[in-house]
Amino acid sequence: SRTNAMRLVGLRASQQLLSDVSLGSGGRSSVSGIRATVFGASGFLGRYVVNNLGRVGSQVVVTSRSGELGLRHLRLMGDIGRIIPADFSIRDKDSLRRAIAPSNVVINCVGKFWDTRNYKLEEVHSHFPQVLAEVCKELGVEQIVHVSALGASAEMQSRILRTKAVGEAALHSAFPNAVIVRPGTLFGAEDKYVNWLAQMQKYLRFYPQFFDGLATLSPVYVNDVARCIGKVCHDYDTYKGKTIEVVGPRPYTQAQLFELLTKIAHVNSPTIVFPPLLSQLVGKWTDFIPDHFAFGDMSYDRVMLFADDNVPSNDPNVLKAEDLGITPSDLEEVGRIWLTMWRRGTQYSEA
Image 1: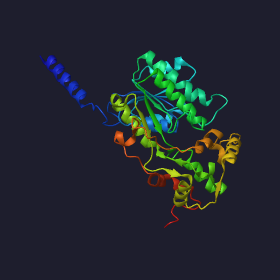
Image 2: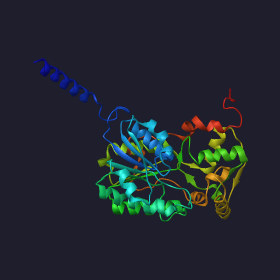
Image 3: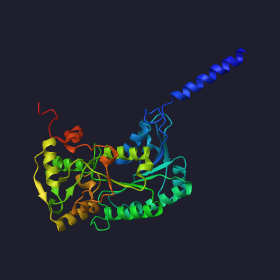
Image 4: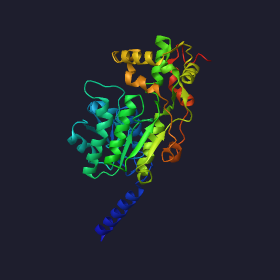
């Protein structure tokens, strides 16, 4: 009959529509199969992670303590209805359960550079990963990607790295299959280190080198770290239980980094080398400076990061970005995109 024929046509049309749905990384309107909850989504690294997941059709629950107003800019990073905001507190397990329940992978990008009156480094870096693992086990989530820091060790002088090391150990104890990602010093358009150095040169007209300027850094482009996390989410079984160190193609001493910024930003400011004791005193002093001043993005705990070299380990069991098929970007090439804004004159002065 005509009715049955129309039903058959409609059924075939529906089947064709379903077959046309792109599975895999086909674009923001495809279906990647990843349902992720990103803690720290509004932070520097978190927003890049959300963008890399959203652009391939993932459903992403983005969490923040600042409410929906602190997350609304992330909605543009995925298809309509695929980026879902959620309030949470690291002290409220019920809020963690609500945020994690829709997902099959949890990504922890939460981190701090200094204590505040509400949260200490130990609570954020050391205690929260263990709580997160317990809630994931309770809800049956079998995939956790935890962002730590390059050089995290109990032997480091920096309290940031020591608390990160405790958090790694606690997470692995409660969730052995978790993937640990250790990025080097992050740089990007919104970073708080390379931009801070350029800001110091432009406004205070000097460049500080802490702990005699001897420490070696391993800067890495923030989007390269986000791509590594996306790669892990797509093929979790290959990387489960692994530790991945993500660094740039070459290390820099503080002096070499100063030369690079001078070359790009056209600022030839004097260098002030702080010996260890004076570096610690300057670090203590920066704890009392408001964020809107030039030293506001520094703290004692962050200054102590320069007390030791921040370089990849020699452990053969630790993976690198290249093992995931990702070639890290060079700071000199990528940095030119935004560091020219710190030039004292126009960025077209070369012409």
